[in-house]
Image (cartoon, rainbow, N blue to C red; front, side):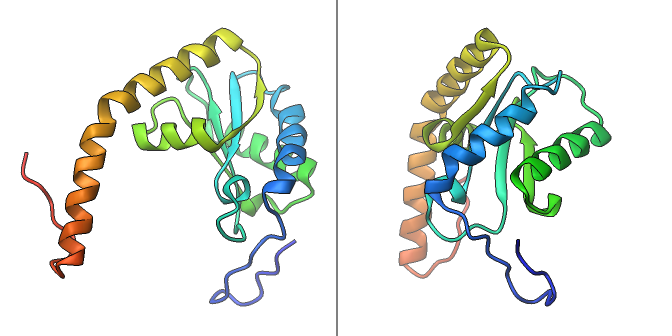
Length: 161
């Protein structure tokens, strides 16, 4: 458990990709019991292993249901308890309306924790990949232009529509 005694210090969690299957299984056991969760993924730095994580990220498919903040918080706290972590290090977000880049990374790197509705999960994944396929050429062009501008010392540049 990280110690947050100094707000200017970053508290890293002693977790990495080797922990992902265990974390996904434990969180999945909890999230399967939540009626508004259609599917959930563990994602982020714990899964990718790019650096020690500061939090544990979950993306949750709700089927665009309106979920109260208290219900989100209850689910987050239940997952934290199952993982023996402080609730403040659990980042749980809806993925139903997320950006194409986020969805692409979620499906490419994320670990499926649970699926209460396989048909809804499949429909979501097909829609997410369709959004990504439509957006990817634009994203690659914008990214290349931004890198070229930064390399030329121009800083971030916005391409007019």
